[in-house]
Length: 378
Image (cartoon, rainbow, N blue to C red; front, side, top):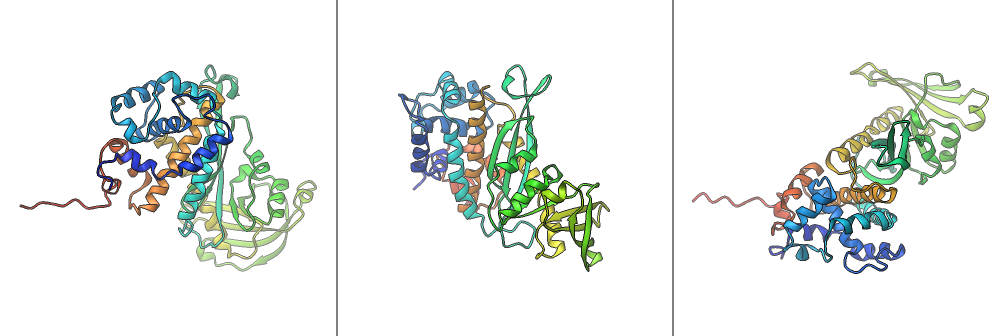
């Protein structure tokens, strides 16, 4: 029975607490901690994400307003602004990174059978980055330009469910293509990228790992055509070719044949040239796979609008990474609840409901409109 439990505690029940404790023990997160554990820190920061808190003082004031309810909601430590600030500054951010990956693995299983706009059996991922501007005075370690600071979130999302499965936080100067050096390669999977990742040496390494890629070619690509296949031009396709690179450097960096697909959007008239190392799928499927890359742009837009990753509660690299990873945990947790409870609402709608009902003693199914209210016509 959930009638006597708060929505927040019901939501936290979806977290694998034992796995969280293992992550904490791995990095000695609770060493010499008396009253404010890593789990208390996580709950405070998750509360801030779910209720759109703007600062540490904002978090403290709002939680103190519910001080009689905190114990039953899962909080055990005494919540103070300075204590939370110290925890964000000092406790290893990798605790929350590791825990996020545990939640991500669980979420990906739940969304395994979801479609994403392309007829594809293999896993498919979209890779991109987004820049978050910061104040150079407060974040000197993240200098981007002369009078500007920034960090980059390099993100690989699983197109089935839009679940982030790889996130790398760097300073704003780091070029996107460098992420390919540390990207985990899954044999048989498709990696969709824009032209910012067009580095033939790194793409050859990806291909050698038995993975497939779909990206866009640059206008000055030097190549030699080996074969052309017929296409149905009523679908927007213009050509489907097998090519080899012709440049003296690029031909050494990527000596294998490539597939070149030219597609013209029937609505906008815009012309796209795609490159891939997959020769088995239909050419139109290659074009549709790249079209799904837009989902990573929507993901960045969503988390910037609905989670707290544009303004930070601390200024150190550890505090920033802690906040980002707990925000990702919150996003994935909501996605898990949505799937496990079969909620027919968007993630944004779920967040809106949770933001005003966390400390209500309401069954979470009812709070998320899973059970229709009984209308008394008498």
